[in-house]
Length: 113
Image 1 (cartoon, rainbow, N blue to C red):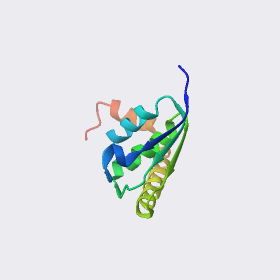
Image 2 (tube, rainbow, N blue to C red):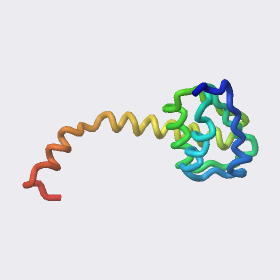
Image 3 (cartoon, rainbow, N blue to C red):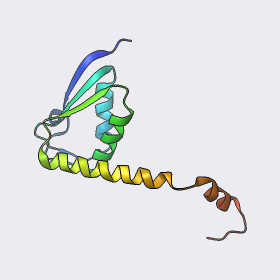
Image 4 (spheres, rainbow, N blue to C red):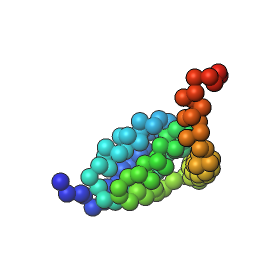
């Protein structure tokens, strides 16, 4: 199965002016499935939820093709930037947790919570 070169996805035509669910990213992923270069057009998108923004950033990191965002209104871009920063901060925090110690505590029948 060959990949299409470039895929433009107009988000407004799929979701209207507001995108508020993680499932929206699943739909985007289905539409982008066989593309090597995906352009997400945010024209007329005035609101995105935190859950959508987080899932979109995860999609950008994990998708095996180039994903470009275009025509993003300043308020939406600012929100995406905030979610990205929060995501980076939480990833740094997660790396500091030693799971082996937690596992040992959870497996100890003498520990009461």
